[in-house]
Image (cartoon, rainbow, N blue to C red; front, side, top):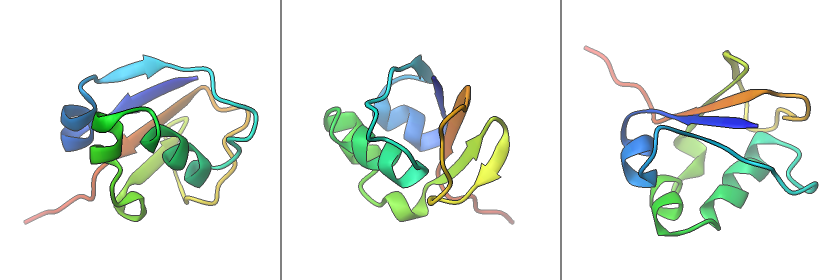
Amino acid sequence: MKLVYFAWVRERIGRAEEEIDLPAQVQTVSDLLSYLQSRGEGYASALVRPEVIRVAIDREHARHEARISGASEIALFPPMTGG
């Protein structure tokens, strides 16, 4: 599965994207965020408040309870601010 990171999520993780094989127990967006937090300091820093992270599954915005099986790309975004 391809993961794509944007803005400060990308900066803290230290990469714009990666291909990853997820463990079978990672079934939802929430599971994914928890799993990623365990992958190291950069991930933990980027996802310290997972509830604020916005997610798109195959370019469609998704809730944290959404299932990710069959997805080819998941994008993680920080909260958006505007003016």
